[in-house]
Structure formats: structure tokens, C-alpha cells
Length: 266
Image (cartoon, rainbow, N blue to C red; front, top):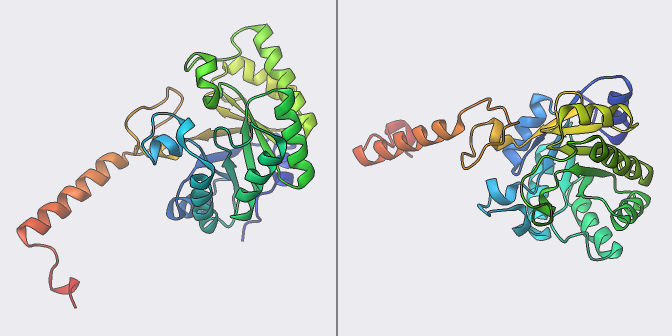
């Protein structure tokens, strides 16, 4: 039986020069299959706003929705670490509210939370969460919750100065107690430099191969979500076609009387 992935074992992977994997899940069955496949961290990403709920951006999903999905995913996982993306405005108003909302995720099964962005306030939230016993994964580079202030889906850290700034932010998050940091849409060379100068693991989301880990949205790699596929997401399957074909066959069997047959009735 594989041991439960923890903050300690994630750090050991980094220290040993090894890699770990991260995929999103939003329901019990998918989480169970990812866990059985050996995925190290299962992330309830706020990407569910778009791929599961049909919203245009991640801004529309709230705490109560994230709690429901976190609870479902946690029930399907035995080995992996379960991390919940804290939704827009769930940790931005004050530290007490941030602790309360993050604590709700832990109560329903999360082992850690992920928080986007950087500021003195964010650092204070991370520090207090860790002091409270809630592990925190940081998120730098392109931060979807700050889409409007960033001016769109733009690559971050394209210059030496910008890379040094992200590294400084990552070091501050590390000092505040974050156990890892996601680097999203950062040039590979920049992410490599940041990774080499941090003690905690980095997780690449379109930041190249030199990070300690890679994270993708499961609906992208399964070929299930077809509205938009990021450049950095590799498609490993074609669930859209599989689901459509199964549904068409069922529809035809119902309408022709082929379903149910004698073995499928009481």
C-alpha cells in the first residue's frame, strides 16, 4: 500500500532531484482513478468554474461550490495529497475570513489549499494559515484570478528583471511557509532559474520541464473539454468523441427498441 503523500514527502521529492505529478479532479470517480494511477497531488482547481460549471472565467465560482467538489474528490483519494484552489475573494478581504474559508476546505477533506498572487497581505495570510496548521501552495506568474489587472492571458517573467521579481516573490512565499509554488505561463528558462534558486518545489503550469512538478487540467488531457485548449496542455485521450459516440449508440438503441434487452430487465 502506497504511503499518503504529504508536505514532507513532496519536499523529499524536490531534495532528491525527482519529479511529481499534479492533475485536477472535480468528482469522486475521477479522483479515484487519478489516485489509482499514481498521481501525487489531486487539485480541485477553480478551473472547474469553466470546465465543470460552464462559466467564462474562474471568478464566478464560490466557497460553497468549492466545498462540495472538495468533499467529493477527497472521498475518492487514499494516496494523493488533496489540494483545493481557494476561489476569487475567498481570502482577499481579511486574514480571519481567509483562515475560516480555508479551514472549511480542510474540514471537508483538503490536505492543503492553493492561493494565487503576491502582496504583503497575501504573505500575512500564508503565514497565519501555516501557523494554524493549513499547508499552502503558492501560485505566481500568470494568475487567472488577476486576469483583469494583468490585461489578459499574458506570459509573465519574459525579462531578467521580471524573472528576478518572480523569484523574490517565490522566496518570500517560501519564507512565509508555503510548501510549494505554481509557476504559470512563465518561459522555461525563467522557471528553471527560479526552481534552482528555491528550496521548495516549483510546479509548472506551462512553465517548461525544469520545475519539480507538472500540473494540467484533467479535462484538457482527457480531451473532454473542447471549448479551449492551452498550448501547454498535451491531449492524451479523446473523451469528447467517446462520450458522444456512446450517447449516440444509446439514443439509437432506445429509439429502435434494442435497449433494454431480455438480460437488462427484471
